[in-house]
Image (cartoon, rainbow over all chains, first blue to last red; front, side):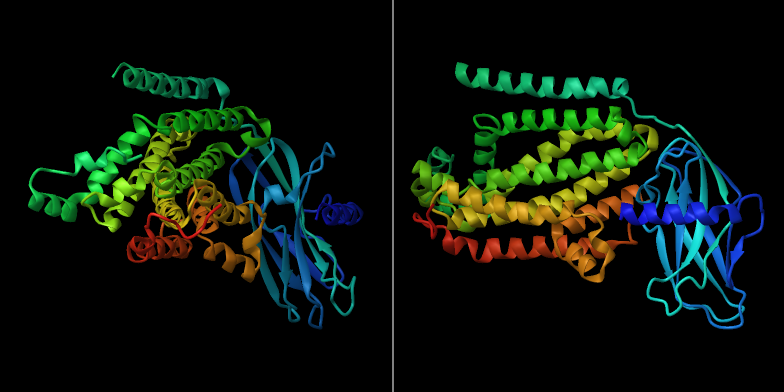
Amino acid sequence: MKRMFMVTAILFAVIAPMAVGTSAAAASGTVDITIDHSRINSSVGDRHTIRSTITNRGATESDRLIAQLLVVSPEGVYQDLEEWTTDPVIKVDPIAPGGTAEVSWNIQTVNKGSFGVYSVVLPNSGASTPGSAVAVSSGVDVTVADARTLSAGGALPVIIAVPIVLALAAAASRRSQRVK
Amino acid sequence: MTASLSTEVDPTEPGQSSARGAVGGWRIIAGQEFRDLWIRGRGPLLLVGYSVLLSAVTYLAATNTLLSFVQQREAVNLTLQVAVAVGVLLTLIVSADAISGERERGTLENLLLAPVSRRDILLGKLVAALSVWLAVFVVTIPYVWVLGREGAVVGRALLLGFIVGTLLAVTMAAVGVLISAWSNSNKASVSVSLFILLALLAPTQLPAMSKSWIGGFLVRLNPMTSGNQYILLVLVKGHRWTQDLSYLVSPVLAVVLAGAVLLVVGPKIVRLTGGVSA
């Protein structure tokens, strides 16, 4: 699965420049894709829904398509998409000329930092004319603040006290049985 | 474990004996088993071991940077899953000793001569074994509180854990008592019971099993995976309580089925000699 994401990421690196610097959806071939956010400010662990609209600009019905979410770190740190969303890849049925299809991803911001989130539409590998439709949306600038609220210090009293109290109670119970 | 039972349920009036046996025999058995387990037996030690395990899990959840992103809900979910799995395991181990243990220790004859029905014996043993699950749940409360207090999920998590855990614990305790009644030795009884539990628990470790229809069906069919999935969906994904009730169908059916078999078939297989030897 990770290999598939790597391949997709390389593909994305090739086609991403088409999207850079444009606020509207970039398009390639007869299909384009837009995304409903331009910026998300989030904290680690927050959940968001990202929706994309795929439009068939051509005069004929599109092939079956695959819509995929991509998360890119400016620092080049690989992001495992399956940590961000349970279903990064969504299959899209053929779209009629002028028609649209809606897809959405429920994401959870799992790492702190700044990220670019894109939605990409690719031809389904089983399509009759592979490569006929490739498009990438404009990017969503996602800034994720650290929100670590769990701490060892806060949990330490319970972690230590509970086993000790139980062990003392067990020992006291044994001792009272011996005395009897 | 119930060697002293005959003196306890042997009142001077014979009539009183049968009435007592008919009405509350299971309570007497459960009370005796409870004392044997928690005052003279291994109950407190099992609980200490469990608390050490849960302390380690909680410490990892609170400090591990990999886990930190998942915040309280996932950490609480992890703790609850461990609590349910270990609670059911300990309940099963105790229940798997219920009848076969008496056979091995040579105390089953005394127990069968006591003025209580065999159904009451099984029911009393079942109730006593379930006290392990209740104790495990009580020990879990402070851990869930410390992990989930800032995420306001403590009440929801505890209720979820109690409902799902109780359904699974009752099921597995009934299965354990039945296997114990059937087995001639503790070794056979505990081995078979643990194998069944492991077979049910193993699918919970398979990733993304519910994505295909057959995977989803198998998840719902297995009470363990189904219960775990329900906890995950309500606690972590924030689903409504009623949204995924279908996941509770198999745990509820398992309780009804195991309980019915225990009460109907169980008394017939409680004999001095079991059906299976090690």
